[in-house]
Length: 234
Image (tube, rainbow, N blue to C red):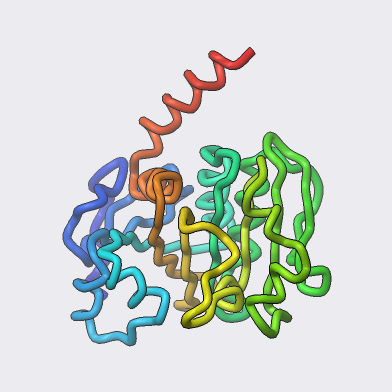
């Protein structure tokens, strides 16, 4: 990774050359590092994950965010929560301790959820009331992706709320269509150090791409559109 550049912009353009970090105060200091296709990522000498390879095959645009603390990870999630719309799906990947629950907590904050938000490891799903309902799923203990449908969880991806799925890879399998529709924001988190996290983000569908643009630095325009839409609501 090249040295971090000084603050140079108020957002991250979604077509910047990979490896040029930009500062975005909307993330509470989190840096937006690189945007482009996954094919360019494959040339930086690291292993490409199955989720990333899937995105490469579908010509997906991606961005990377670098968070320096839990507070910054919360801020990224809060930005998503503030821009979330009914039916949005956020898929979270990453090992234990990578920050998935912290990101989910930020999304809950952005949705106006009051109280503590914890990972529903044993119950698989928890529901919270906010500006929109939040459906927080944790698939860590899932043995087979088809169990989701058997357990009757399809409604969480078709309703009027926002679904945030930790360990989303356990709900996916080769040759099996996942229960959620192909309209999502996918965030793969990895641990860089004790406090630092790298968030690699891709999207599918119109709403997923909208949320990706929010993270890529289009937050100001999206916030203005959101403000006008809410003002027009009865």
